[in-house]
Length: 145
Image (cartoon, rainbow, N blue to C red):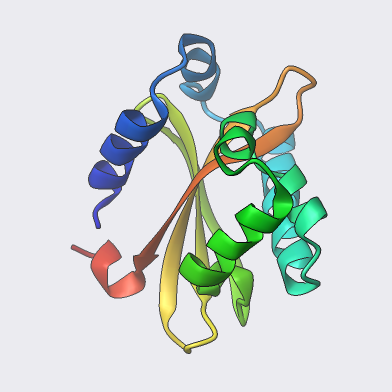
């Protein structure tokens, strides 16, 4: 899956938000970058502990509404996002505004020893915290295409 295809899917699935798009169109500050990395890292650590409530707390409101509760959210993560649920290695790559969305790229080695680029769409909340609004797994071999 190409990055453009991911963005197109995100726009179709999650719609657009003028306020979020305006905020995420500018280059992120170092403080924002650090906060985003901390949010993603904390969610991954919660996954590793099977702490569904904490992991779910890092999801943006649209994701929380879609899944309703931590148990349903964790079932989805365990079944469809094993590289994020049980990563062997996590390395943060670029953070950039793309198509009105702020996308953090993360290199992950999954439990299957395969490399993935994980694309996190991040949303700033009214309290200035960052939450994860969408995630896409791209096998690293596909990222080059």
